[in-house]
Amino acid sequence: MQELPAIRRATPDDAETLSALATRTFVETFGHLYPAEDLEAFLADAYAVEKQRVILSHPDYAVWLLERDGVAIGHAAAGPCGLPHPDVARGDGELKRLYLLRDHQNGGWGGKLFATALDWLLRDGPRTLWIGVWSENLGAQRFYARHGFEKVGEYEFPVGRVRDREFILRREARTIPAP
Image 1 (cartoon, rainbow, N blue to C red):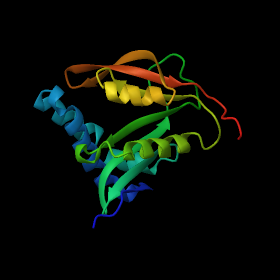
Image 2: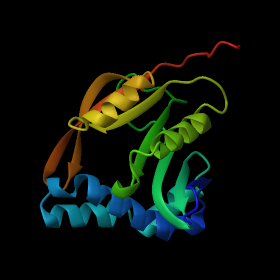
Image 3: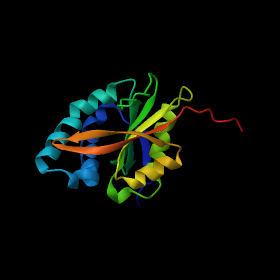
Image 4: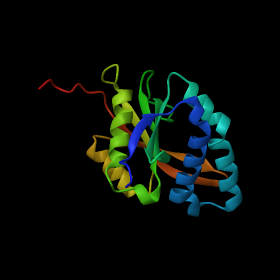
């Protein structure tokens, strides 16, 4: 019998696992959009093992792995906002990645990973949160809108020669009233 998936904070020792998982989820989600040589060059740079190790070692960033039976099937990453928007302020947080392997989507675990990342981003109190999302990923846009994120801008995300139109979403800092 399969175990239920579990979420755990990734460590620098998970760099190879994260590199492989990030590559696989990106290809599953977006691989069809790019010429092979552009995709290959992007993946080799963006998800290089050493780059993942640096992220996993940095105190301002956090990554979580969703695992089932000891195998990574999803991940989320969060840290300081790096999106190109004039209103981004020091101290703002960003959900940088949220991906699950296709066969493990629609079971509620993406929402649990999202909640884990947001809890971490808000651990020191309310702050403005940001997300970049592909302009044609309507499902993700609806999901983020249900959680209070609104479109406030756009930018181009380069993958080789291709420039994707990305939306910048923001949720203003807010205090949650005590029950």
